[in-house]
Image 1 (tube, helix red, strand yellow):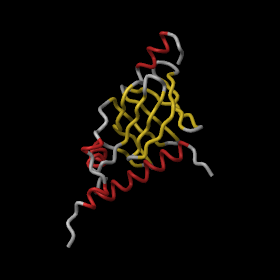
Image 2 (cartoon, helix red, strand yellow):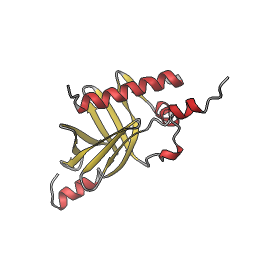
Image 3 (cartoon, helix red, strand yellow):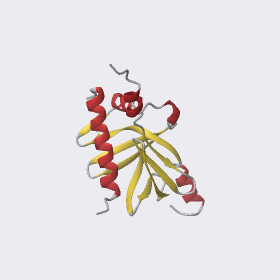
Length: 156
């Protein structure tokens, strides 16, 4: 049975967030108006906060996840394509601005609304939410994954 986008994205996020806590002990239109609205959304967005499973995602938790190479980001391209990366699991889809503060984000056959609130992109699904701010996506070469950490541990 094929899982929907909501279930996939939030399940992967919730599991990885729980793993992080355990590991580190961290508590549209096609005219000019449509193009202008789309520009509000275009670019790279990195996780800045939110809540999942009743737990708040704060900056200390995000920093700890990033140190483990567990990055969360969304890329919204000018051509309407989108990439969401949840801890190395990358999924592609599409997006379209509805107005200056609202866009539709489609992954597989599921479409979710994202909103701009106080300069952040907010994806809210079933009581959970992820907040993203415009920023630079961490380079893959500088990330340390849990596998790399395990392989660098000296053997006894």
